[in-house]
Length: 135
Image (tube, rainbow, N blue to C red; front, side, top):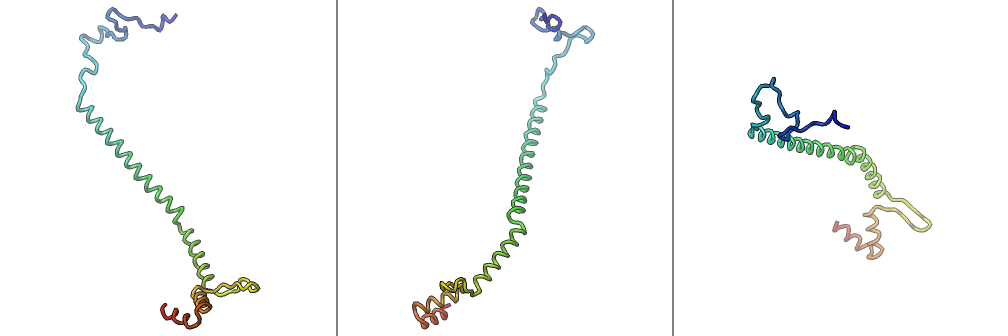
């Protein structure tokens, strides 16, 4: 059976390991009989503020890191260069006149010129001159 590992209870209901020997001296002081409330309170306050400071510090670090990462990925120089190329190509296309499909009468003309053509078609050259003067 487990006779070697079992601990017998004494007459007072306490285990043998709880008893102190004569070599330890009598009477024995109660262990942890005097708890320092100030020490426990101080440890609690220090631990609480330490954890709070850690959480705030990590939050600030994470916020700064993600902001920098977003800026690098979405607002980097590469996207600005692509935008500039696209914008310049679009402006060039909008400013030049070109026959897109001559057989069907499709032409690309600058917006200002196209407005003048439409006004001239529907209202005559006189209204086109008035429209230019208003601009």
